[in-house]
Length: 107
Image (cartoon, rainbow, N blue to C red; front, side, top):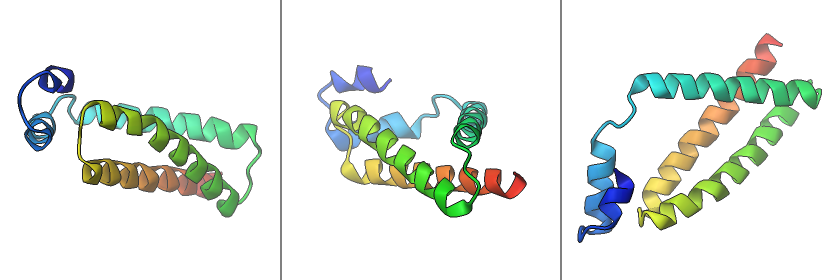
């Protein structure tokens, strides 16, 4: 949907509101993505033999920076607002840190 809207005469704000007001994947996709992300982070923490919270959080902040840099190009190509980028990346950061803490807690 976002790529289709890119080729229209709509302003970036109008494209953003249309693309994000219409549910495209639903809650099940978010749940599956969170499960996959948890498995990946768990494997990384096991592979790197991370044993404490601070190292786990540091590693996940590094992953967050890499993911943010990669997603920034997507926001630029869709001409989406910077505020939406910051909201999404802060959400990703909180999710990654939450996953890291949860994995360490149950480890």
